[in-house]
Length: 304
Image (cartoon, rainbow, N blue to C red; front, side, top):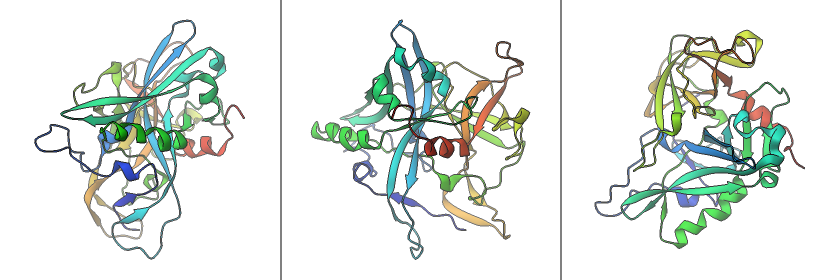
């Protein structure tokens, strides 16, 4: 297996190629691994006035890769999803939900704005995929057709989409040469307490520590334990391994990548609990394994 830089191409992504503004514009360049382009703040409003804020991230499904392609090459993206924590949406109370909002960054002159995407309860239900096990706190929303349509609007207003990225199955443990063990550093990317760089609209990257060997089910759940202090708004954050240039494939040897690579580990839920009410208060958290995203996608949407 080899590292490769993946270029993305479908109608909705042709408009997201790298650009850095014009002249001396302060619009930020993406980081090498484009970690800051992976995520989105999440906001959910309910008919009784409740407002829940959380974190989310984009997830890509790729079309077949060209087995003969060498080096950097184009690859089709067939679907784009927004992934977040299920408890932010509260699917059992979907009829009470009035608006689900996610966002992408848009450059406009010398500053960066959020471009907001809103879904009502019906539209959300028709796109919402959940795991069969009710305890798994993962929600996946198919936004492919929305992005195809909506991403043209800022362009018509001479605004520019800033680079965005998505986690994908090629970054699953076992597929990547990167080895992850208990004691390794994790990066949790999201919007704790609603915090973000308000000028550049960049998320917070916080570090944690992996406690559970990958593949082991913590307390019998499809989840792993991590040393990470919870903050309201972190639920739904993306969890990845600390980016590195070095990988160790299973067949031996060492591989190196020009751009830093990472392993997609899962979706952050929050604190661990002794029971449904009492938290353990040990600054430990739960991450639902990466494969639960694909498991949710396989299931039909909540409303058909």
